[in-house]
Length: 378
Ligand SMILES: Nc1ncnc2c1ncn2[C@@H]1O[C@H](COP(=O)(O)OP(=O)(O)OP(=O)(O)O)[C@@H](O)[C@H]1O
Ligand SMILES: [Mg+2]
Image (cartoon, rainbow, N blue to C red):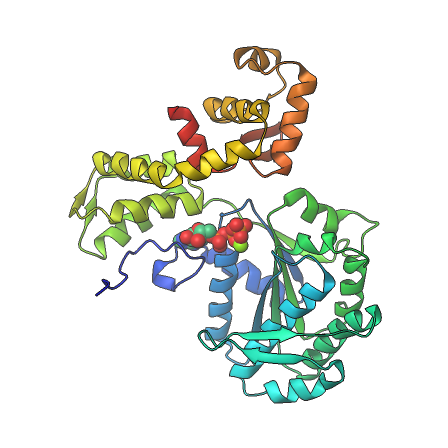
């Protein structure tokens, strides 16, 4: 028999409040914006906790106002407007089914001849739509939102990885979406994404449809003292203890980037000791390297040796504000500034390097903290 899952460090975006660290201020901010009448753009680097925050906020909204309907639409893997429609409709059908109003919806959109089935294992809806022409694709979006508007209930819709709509061929998706949603007074939107420059451009460029249409929330790291206390409490909740030194190591080694903190703590917890000290942290780090090493070699196979070398150079510095500086190029034998510029651009595009702008410039680091730490050890 498999043991009951009891690791208090979750590796999923949101499991339950007792496994979720903080974000109280962000939840209040989001609720305040949404119900104050402002849609929200939520951005952060990957794995920082955007999806978890959305789920936690939805739970809080439901606790305070059970009449509000919340929809989560992840469009990460969508490539076309058809994919978008399918994802949106699947999310809508799933929620309306729980509310026992799905039949009304299906009748409303029957002109679009949707075929809806439910996964026998998960009960998740699967929608398929066949369009007569391109206009019908846009009409589908219009009809879904019109139905939700006419429900006359407060609704929150979170669209995750929103920058993806820029990629759809043959349609000005930003303009299409904006035109259908801008007069929906009962529907509040969270537009969420990790590709900061694309997201910021969509909402701050005066030539784009979503210009200045939302409030911004940029999700930061969880404060050190709060994460420290959470880690200690989570171990204690299972009758374990952990030394202050070990907690300090965890927070600094992971750079307090949420997923990496959770994964390291999760791995330490799997070591069956009642008291965890620095040796368990070191052991867990080795276990993580063993687990991830194949993936790191896979990355190496997907980029050029020069890019790999550049990545390693940044990792060895920890972070750098000057990846074009002469001494940096010399120290790591990177070659000409033009070579370095090409590597930098490509690694940023591939999300292997992370650029963090600040008041005096930009700091670059290896995006994946485990990869960065692994390079340091090589
Ligand atoms: N507040 C939190 N408390 C505990 N763990 C968290 C918290 N927020 C996030 N996590 C952990 O971090 C991981 C990444 O979070 P999440 O998926 O929400 O990030 P994301 O910003 O949406 O990432 P991506 O951009 O890759 O979609 C989660 O799987 C979970 O393990
Ligand atoms: Mg996410």
